[in-house]
Length: 75
Image (cartoon, rainbow, N blue to C red; front, side):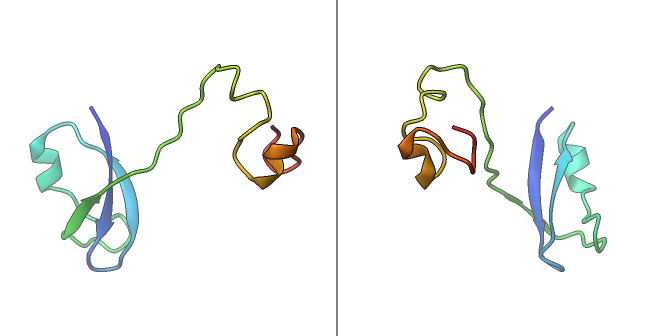
């Protein structure tokens, strides 16, 4: 049962919802304004791994990571 992200055409609110079936998607409404015209949007997700590259400090999440010690993201 996937969780999809939607954007409301009425208020531009973005929300996530668990969709169990196609019938659930037909009953979909915005939790913010109650609008019924909602469009599925692409979601960005993060994956956490145990790779040695992820903890080496080089090429991490921000500009400070290249030095090997980053106060912003902890790499």
